[in-house]
Image 1 (cartoon, rainbow, N blue to C red):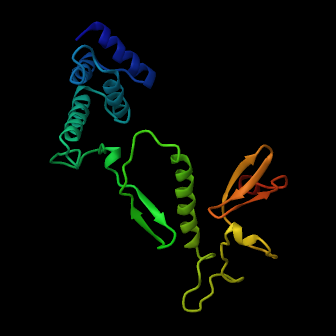
Image 2 (cartoon, rainbow, N blue to C red):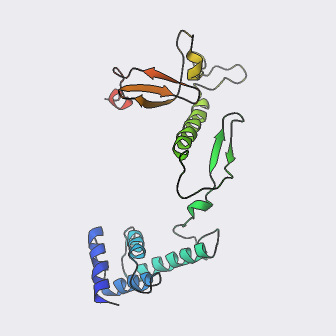
Image 3 (spheres, rainbow, N blue to C red):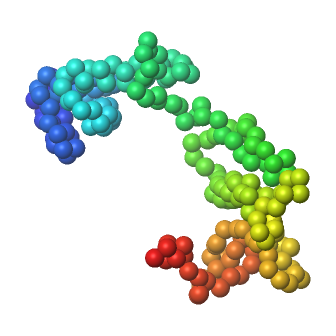
Amino acid sequence: MSRLGRKKVQRKCKIRGYTLEPDAVDEILSFASNFDDSAPDDDAIDLLLDFLETQPRKDKETVHRLATKLSRADAAIYDGDDDCVTSTSEPDWHIIDAFKVPKFRYDPIKKSFYKHAGRLPIHGEASAKSALHKDRLLLLSQIISRHKEFSRPAFGSKSSDSGPHEISPIQSLIGQTGRRWVMGMISQLEDGHFYLEDLSSSVEIDLSNAISFTHCNH
C-alpha cells in the first residue's frame, strides 16, 4: 500500500471527524484497489467511509465486514441478481438499480395507478419537465380526493358539518358565482403575474394579501 494512498484515506477520515488505525486504512485501500488497477478509486473509498461513519466501532474488523458486503452487492448488480445482496443473514442495506425500480402513474379516469411500461432514459426529453408536474398534480389530487372533507359520503353519512366539498376544475369557474374549491399549481406565466393552473385551464390570482401556513402557526 502506498504512503500517498494512506494519507488520502486519513485526510478523508479527518474531514468526516474520525481517524483510523493503519491496519484499517490498509483494508480500505485493499477494497478500493478492486475497482481500479492503476490507483485506489476515490468513489469506492468515499462510499466505504460514508458507511463506516455510521458504525460505533471503526476498526479493521468493521471495515472488512463493510467492504465484504459492498463487494457482494457490486458483484450481484453485475451478475443481474435482482436481490442485489445475497447473504445467509439479513443485509444492512440493499443496493438497487434505479432502472429496475418500477414507475407508477395515476390514471384520473380509472382512478387507479398503473405501471409505466415505457423506456426510462438517463437524460430527460423536452416533455419530461411538464410530465413531472402533471404526474405530481395528479398524485396530490387523488390524495386530496380521498380526504374525508372532499370525498363523497358513503351510505348517506356526512363527511363534515358543512357537507362534503368538491374540487372544481378551473375551467368550470367560467360564468359561475359563489364559493368554489379548486386545486392547482401556482405558476408565474408572466412577469409579476401569478396564476393558479390545473390540467384544464389557468386563472390569474392576487397573492398580495396571501398568508402562508408557517406564519399562521405563530
